[in-house]
Image 1 (spheres, rainbow, N blue to C red):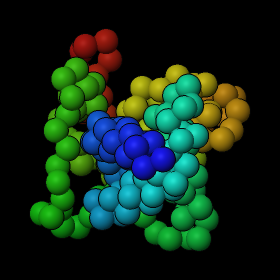
Image 2 (cartoon, rainbow, N blue to C red):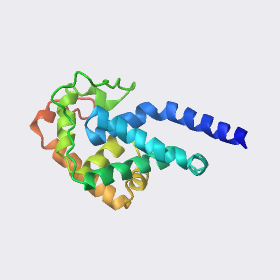
Image 3 (cartoon, rainbow, N blue to C red):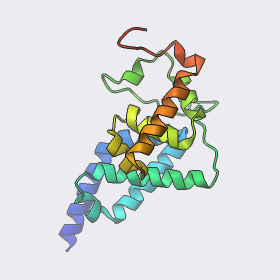
Image 4 (cartoon, one colour):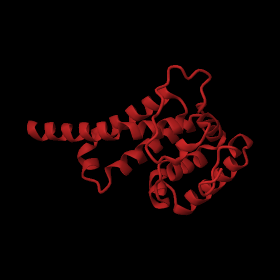
Length: 179
């Protein structure tokens, strides 16, 4: 019996270590603050650990964990807590190193993008982050957000339209490789 628990703990630890950077990136984009992102990821992993036997056996454990994270974030937002994606002082932040080929990393001013994301309503921000930053399909984003594919499409389209209307982003947006 102890061996089964140890194996489960090792599986969870391996999952957590492998996914930590991506979970932190998503949490930061949702919360806008390093400490809040860390809290969100830790809370998510606490809940997932308790059910790891079920989660580890799921077809896509990462999607399950992402759904838990979105739900926890949504629950926090419902309590009317303010979120800021552009802290006044970012000296204490651990800055993300973009993955190779990350189209968002090609933007000249990531700060402008983060400020623009902060202006979006929560559901639009979630849809934009999951679809375009995390590169999930509409179906995967809908599962993570707990809504229909149509809702994801609508929120993502509205969010992208709002982002395109922000003058500070106009200079950093590329279309088809051209600036």
